[in-house]
Amino acid sequence: MIQLLLADGHPSRRGELRNALGAVAGLTVVGEAGTGEELFTQLAGTTPTVLLLGLDLLPPGAFALLPTLRAQYPELRVLARGELSNEHYVARALDLGAHGYVLNAVQLPELIHAVFTVAAGRPFLCSTIGLALVGRLYARSPTAGTTARAALGLSKREMEVLDLVAQGLTNAEIAVKLFTSKRTVETHRQNIIAKTQTRNTAALIKLAARQGLLG
Image 1: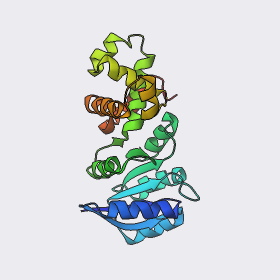
Image 2: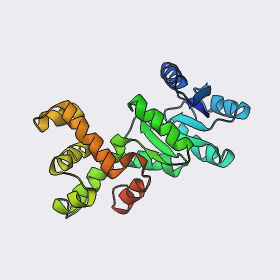
Image 3: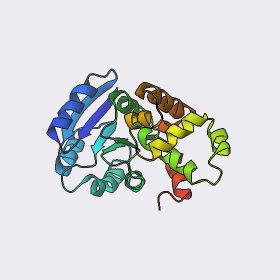
Image 4: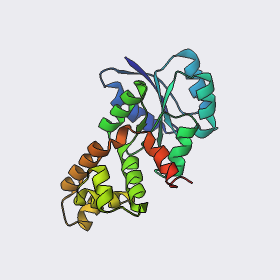
């Protein structure tokens, strides 16, 4: 049984997370916190497997707390949850001790998958961020055309979708751009995720850094 601690600065959002995740088989919510002080009070009285840490946690802020969490609770798995998909922001959270990162807008099935993945000791990067990073990596490559498609195993249309994801377009916007349906775009995205194993590769961040995307 995975014991989950929720930390988020918004009471209503904590309530939604508690209700949604508390109903998942194999998960139990053991506590919640809205500030850093409340978080450490909870940690003193319980031993959660995973901390779902909202990066907009009230003062002193999640980024300030991550090094302390890593030092004082080395066994605790931290899944960061934030609003921004900027690579620098994501990389900073991972560098400071988070084991995974999801966006606030992540769909419940992927969030559940993220919690179980991080609890199992594996890193996690949500698909939206992963796809954007993959797209930018190959957009910057001088061999981004046929060679990139071959390296990724993607079709020409999947590469087109990937490029638009990297530009920040939504599924609906991509559908309009490519004169297709939103459902078709969603299918292409799922195929890209499967082929690139985007959600489960922490190496993607390191690769992005080596390619100059993070600095």
